[in-house]
Image (cartoon, rainbow, N blue to C red; front, top):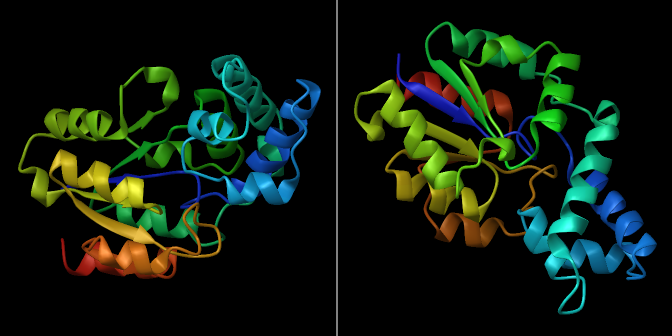
Length: 214
């Protein structure tokens, strides 16, 4: 049973808008007034980098990032998951070993997954609290623990950064491109980066995983 590693934000859960809202609130309290348009235009799929791009040099980015993550975690119950996620993950878990890897905190990830009963579908859930230096390092750790060839594994993400991370770790990558994607609006760049597949729905991603890489 070859492993499949899922991203959370933008793949299983629609979180980008909430992060943008909380970033605005946190930066406003810190005296860095920015508009929601400025926040969205500065978006990158990495919260510290997103915050750093919005504040002046010398601002306490780690502290602000921690406040953003805490604020988002406190409101994780507001987030929608893909309606098909429970059925898709249940079906895939019968044939593949499923893992979850996210740059979000454990508090946020478990808040979302437990609320929707998804946590038991994953053999392991890796979050920013686990201290890996990069997604590529975390992916490599999962693959090493699973054994087998990295090329038999697949990573399901939604950004250019996910393509690079999966490639660095040596596994295949499926990009789920929808309006939930953190790199929404960059489809041309995603296709130029040549992931193994681009899916327009979680169901389509599952068909790719079940069909081509069983």
